[in-house]
Image 1 (cartoon, one colour):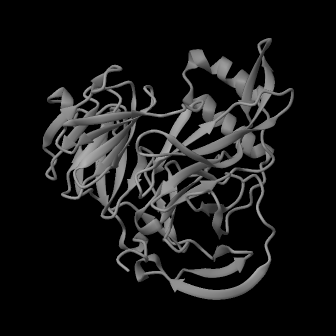
Image 2 (image 1 turned 45 degrees about the horizontal axis):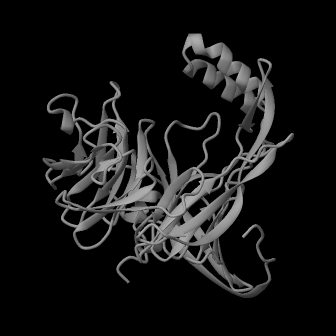
Length: 402
């Protein structure tokens, strides 16, 4: 799907939603039209702003105590139906199951290549009423376990794509895997991002999209040619929805929604900032990097920065998260001078923009659940925690419960 059909308006319907009083009098205009069978959703107006609640419902992790209750290199977490939480760490024990009150209930998974071992666990999803599936990145396979920590089976990916990246699980149990290749050229060239759908046994079902992924080119640094992407350039990315795919090319204020076969069904658009990159932006980014990099590493980092060209326009979306009822959350790509911390736009299952959630600088949005946002946080001592915050009511998808 390298190209999309030209827009031809067949019908138009305009809807408007207002914001809760806690967000002021701001509102988002929301309109829907059909273009050659593709639903185009347009969101306009000032975006309501939200923050995390003051305290989480549950916080996992601790500074001291038993090692299995201390969290390091957390890559994913999942809230189960009874309120328990499964946490995936890349430091042993790899999988930790916490009870709803935060007590450690069970641990499993040691490093290795055996059936009950993990090379490098990456993502976790529900796989039935009482079972889990974990994507093992290094061993290139799906591992099935019960919620009680009992091993079930492993399913290797067949065939294995280059540099596979897990991108979520569909409602039927199949899994979306993306592969970002590197195209080497004498000039800056777009390398492809390919999306592949594997069934629950690890067998390739089909290739569902192939789009420009990232723009790479050669630069000379210290007499050596290296391939880099341009400063501020957008990157493509995708996430599986229960019955579709959310896809961004990172170069427009839009999220594309595909059906499971890769056909475009909806374009979600919104109004963003001017994307022009100026010399002031480049200078500010260089200064920020210089402050952040340790002194002994600073000269080489600055040489690399100076050798890398800047894009003419900022990228737009730097991450996606699926939510309940087909909702999608999109992370805004940060710019020099922006407040520290992730900023996420929440869209309901119909493409309405509900608002923007700003996270503190030490927090990362890991998962959008039906009841909670799962956030990975670090404190001033770099101790990791997994926190469950109630979803702000205004950002609960309007499609849920219908």
